[in-house]
Length: 429
Image (cartoon, rainbow, N blue to C red; front, side):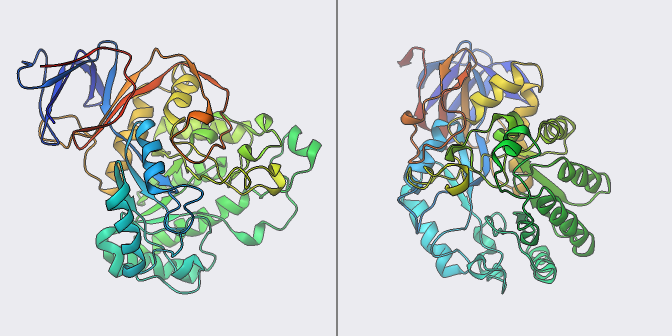
């Protein structure tokens, strides 16, 4: 398919420029003002932005093993609708991808069913049980990194061994940082009025940041690249900021929900149940500050779908996890960019540019010769988030019913249109 995107503002070299983009055979073949349209299908994009396709480095596609929650087909359709052209899939599956054979089962499903690029993580330990290392060497050529997401690696020596091996393989450790010994001390979910009033059990913020501190020390010892998943506490931000200042190869992500919500927004509903939990305003503000100063590298949704039954038991009984692929950009734009809190360019770097740099993924630039993975944004599309319309099988989002002002209008992956909701005219020449 040969496409000419004309009239849009293109995010190039960190700024927006008015130019056309020509796409052929899956790549960008030209980008300059007023390109000739002959031989191309022309898409008029006046008043739209054209940006590199979003990347989410933390999603749960649930297949193989839990297809009633999500499938690769439905999850990547949701990703495309959210503007994503690539996602990194977490390994808490059945079987866990902890060896070449188990990983191949997942790769076969991805190759058959994915709408966009999917890069599966390999597990750090066998079965994600923390008892023995997975076969990292066999999986390394096929994965962007190694993670036991859903559980922190509890043993310091096990994590040290994993880092030493990952270093030799030139792959990052992607850590769910959680010290399980600190989850049994009766801490309320947050130090907020809602938690105090309702007495909800949850996890001590130290269960996150103390393991971050442990692992940063291990990075000093091993030199391994280390990426921290879904940070949620002000202490984690401070630790990672200091590690970066020291020159250590440490990066991190947080989620849209941690950047926008506080514990005062909680309702006793499963769609607010996630791990780590929504924390205080001070934590939220520290995360925003970290995004602004570059401490927080990526915004990742931790898209974690469950069945309606599994999310119907309130904050106490529901499983952890919310969906986020189809709400991320409109929520971020409406609540952070439009309000003047965070520049749009900062959001785009966290969604488009930094994830690719950290994990060595292709794309990220709209220059001539680059892979044609790009997203078209409409910043003037007021609408209300309605989870019943999601492409994902999951429906649990704390943002259901929120009014937003922007939308993803089109997603192009490898030169093919994988999502199209343009409110404009398209002509074929």
